[in-house]
Amino acid sequence: MGTVIESSLDKGRGPVATVLIQNGKLSKKDYILVGKEFGRVRAMYDEDNKEIASAGPGIPVVITGLSGTPNVADNLISTNDEKKNQRSCICSRI
Image (cartoon, rainbow, N blue to C red; front, side, top):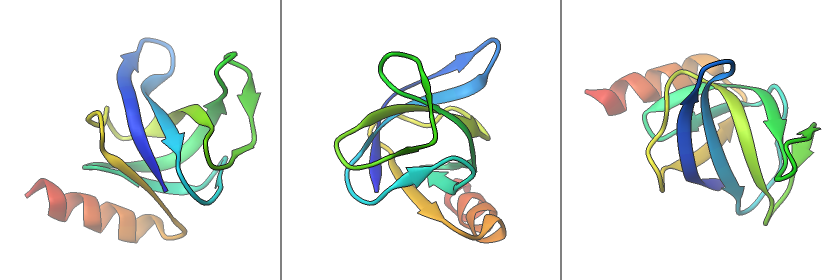
């Protein structure tokens, strides 16, 4: 669905990642799995740092709500099951 371009730990927002959406649509409150990190999209910002509700293909967005900072080039996958994300994440960390 998308690829991480950069990530960092923001003092006010926690782990943030800039992601380029490649296909599909990412919306606020979607459950996501990004490399070895998981979470729920708490907020999304466009390139002008304005909060947006959803993003489609070709749009870079900054997302918050991850469990940690993902690595550059990690793939973003959107799912509808939080428990499945957590299990997948734990298995990939082992």
